[in-house]
Length: 373
Image 1 (cartoon, rainbow, N blue to C red):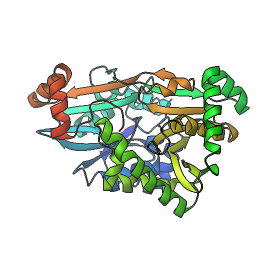
Image 2: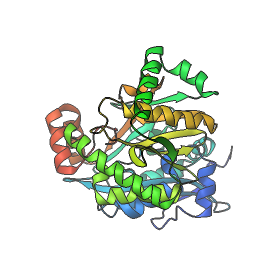
Image 3: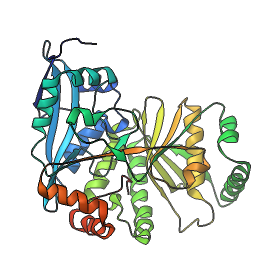
C-alpha cells in the first residue's frame, strides 16, 4: 500500500475518454462491474445523458508522482423536478454501480484526507446525492463521500454458480418437477416447427433481434403498467449500440427462433467469468403456455456452462423465476445524502409517503426502486 497520505490529485475531467487505453487498463484491474465497462459508460454519456439533459460530472483521481490514473467516479448532475441530484452515470440502464478502481487503491484514497475532501468539494453543490444499486460489500463509498451509511435497497440481486457438465448443474439447481416441466415444454415447441437457439454474431442478426425485442416488450410492459425503456428511441439506440459494439467481447445476444423467426431473446454482459442478464423478451402472445422465458434462460445457462462461465447473474429484481434456477439473493444498498432544505424535504417525502413516490415518478421520471424496467 502507498504510505504517502497525500499521494493523489483530484479533478473534474468532463472530457474524459472512456475508450482510452488508460481507462481500459484501469477497468481491467479494478473491482468495478460490467456496468462500468468502457463501452457501457461511453455510450451512456454520449447517447443517454444529452437526452436526459444530464450534465457530466466525471471525477478523476491520479497519482501525484506519476500522473497515472488511479480511480474514476463516473457521475452526473441531473435535474429531477425542482431539485438537482448528483448520481452515478446510470439513467436507469445499470444494475450495479461502483467507483472504478481496485479495492487496494480505494483504501489508499481513503487514507489521503485531502483527496477525500477534494472529492467531496467537487461533487457539490447538490440538493440530493443519491446512489442506489450499490453491490454488497464492494466499497465503503460513504466514507469516501462523508455520507450517511447506506440502507438496504428494496430489491435484491440474484445469481447462481455454474458447474460442469450442464446436466449436473441442471440437476443441482432446478428441482425435479421444474426439470420435467421444461423438458416437456421444449418437446412441445419442437413439434411446432424448426426450433433453433444461437448467439447473434453479425450486424443483421443483431439488428433484427433487437427489433423483435422492442416489439415483444411493448405490450408486455404496457399491460403491467410500466414503461419499457426499449420503446424510447434513445434507449433503443443505446442498447443496440452496446450489442453491436460489444459483440464478441463483453456482450452476448441470444435468440431462440422458430422457423427462422425470433420468438425469444436475451441480451447480457460478460465480465470476469460471469454472464449478467440485462434485457429479455418473449413472444408471449404466440406461445402463451410454453414458458418461453424459462426455456430461454435454461438454454442461456447451458451455453454459459459450455463456455466455461462461473456465474449466471440475473441482476436486480425479485422475480420468482430466478429462484427456480437456484439463484440466491444478495442485498443491494442505497446511499442518500442531502445538501439543501429542498433535498431534505424531498428525501423525507420519498421515504414517508408512497403517493408522493408515485407523483415523483411521473413528474421527475425518478425510478425509486433499483429495478430496471
